Length: 256
Image (cartoon, rainbow, N blue to C red; front, side, top):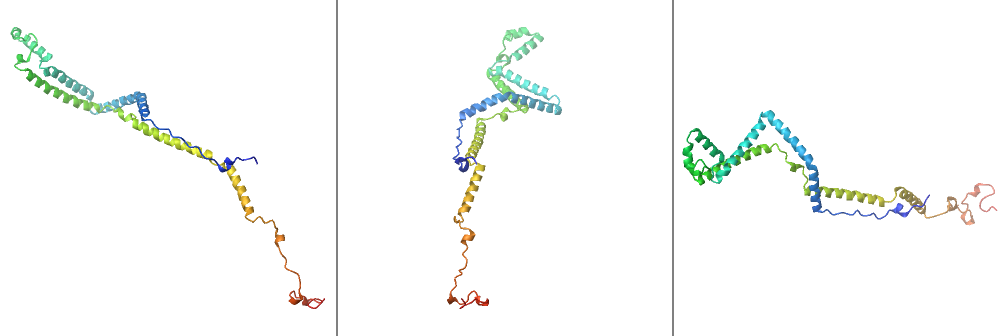
């Protein structure tokens, strides 16, 4: 049998799996980089999501898409018209309308004398700049509310990508769990490598048991025959006839 090293029989002190600390800044960069890499796929998913919802709404409300576009356009026009009013100016489309009406009424000369041939002002309509600004504020508020309502309606068809992005905290938690499992797995490997060899340990235990069994008999080398002590055959006259020799002719006490 070949020589077995003591480490195979008794094992050895295991190595310790070292722990590497996490850097939160690096975890943040990792999360951002992964999100950027995944964003094209997230965008494709968002487009599919929007297409699906739009088709569903069209099946329930025919012309839904056109209605949505028209509502947004109207809100935009209200906001555009409110902008010059807030500055105390007559919107250009109103000025054009007044001029067209004046031409059709063949009174353009009268308007020219009143200054309506040029840029119209609030005074030409019997209003002040404050009146125009108040009307502009009301129109802007109306347009803003309409834009918000249409925006909320449209946003229901947009998939929020934040649900598919990894935050730095999630990235750190994932890496922490991964490192814990990896460290534990490595430590288990070190423990197994340091443990005794099962075959060598079994042979060693068998030999030790045999030696122990041999020594448990006290190390006595006497055989059964040697340890047997026969009864004494010495005879004394003072004992009478302990072996009943008198039962045989020529034997017994007093017989030579």
